[in-house]
Image 1 (cartoon, rainbow, N blue to C red):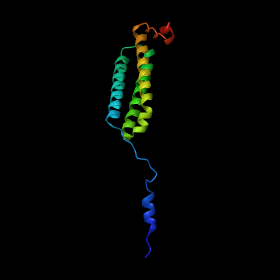
Image 2 (image 1 turned 90 degrees about the vertical axis):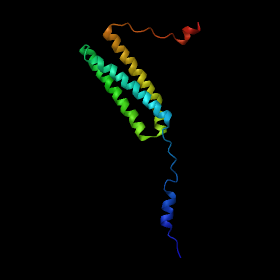
Image 3 (image 1 turned 135 degrees about the horizontal axis):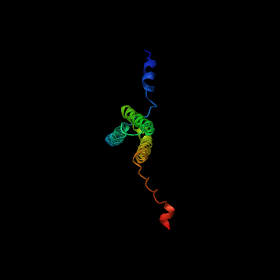
Image 4 (image 1 turned 180 degrees about the vertical axis):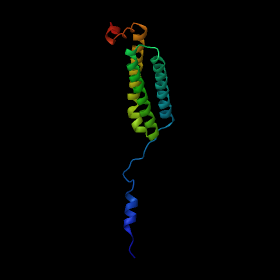
Length: 129
């Protein structure tokens, strides 16, 4: 009696070399929700200014708001995929993006309200002297 090896070989190789997938845990979800919260808050601040500012800054604020929305979509896409590695790889990018967008928002508000920019932080060299 001969055994049918075609089914056995197909079953044994399925997923044999595929590493186990690590999913997001509650800390990752919390980080995602925190970033999205800050981005949405920044977006709200941006859109509240659009109706009361000069046209020269409106375009920059709209562009900034679109950048914020694009980042929210990326983050939510990572969360929907529920894979830890891509999210962990992009986490620093998301934080950096948020900081850059916040600085841009503050610069635009400084232009609107004629606020002088804050002095740059002291460099490491001047602190050592």
